[in-house]
Image (cartoon, rainbow, N blue to C red; front, side, top):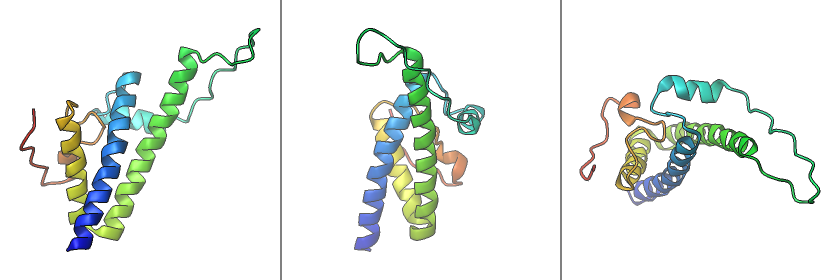
Length: 138
């Protein structure tokens, strides 16, 4: 069982970092990832081209708010796709038990850092009949 514990730990740590970044991006963009329709809208929308670079007298390009948001939307969509791929690969390679444990570990980590359930767009109760137990949930 040592391998399973190490696999769960590594997967959980990866998901923790990924979910935290996803939740922060969603907050910055004011996207409610705990709403299925909002998640579907983010995933269905093709990445927007960044606004054209403004020509200024200075040589350094100016990063506008619109440009920053376009980059953040692309990053959010990419990270959601990456997380989905990581989870499906884990289910195939490691099975349901390891994947479920790692996902619960990642969700508990977010909750312990003050995020609300579903802030990362992943309500485990929606995906598993047996949700995670949140012993130290705020």
